[in-house]
Amino acid sequence: MKSNSRAQHILGIYRACAAPLYRVLDEIPDDHLRWKPAPESRSISEIMRHLIRVDNWFLGRLGYQPESVDPKGGTPEDILHNLKIVQRQIETILKDCRDDSELARRSQAPDAGEHEALGEVILHISQHYLYHLAQMVYLRRAQDRNWPAPLKEWENATHVISANITKTGG
Image 1 (cartoon, rainbow, N blue to C red):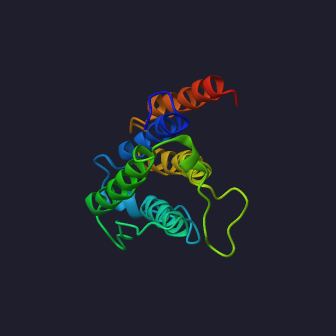
Image 2: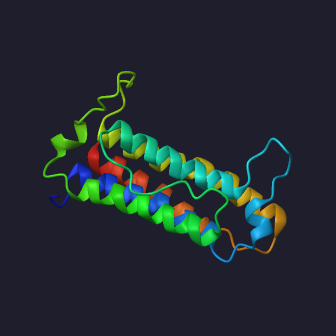
């Protein structure tokens, strides 16, 4: 990957959006990991597993064999392990882009949408992380008002996104 390439900008955004997820799992008690405010709600564990499954689904649609699995009923360590595997795979895919034209490689899935090119999918995944991060922060803080939410990491992600939009012209 060339420095200052679009792939490098997307990698920066992806890393910034992924970073706060680790803090959600840091020293989380098992009962907090699995707690739901209502029966039809998702727990932090279920949201994290959802992120792993969606990332794997997108990787499969783009022609990659996912390297992580859904850690059903797993511990925070199992979830973190599989989250890191899928994120490392996505980072490797971006780093292996020889030039920005590879970001335009489209999904070959028969039902692929018009925005299912590699670069667009990874940006979508990044936004998906931040969307669910807000839910998980809410769930952790609902159980422990003293838990230090990853607000600096979230704010950093928004600054990285803004800076990259400004650099690339939108």
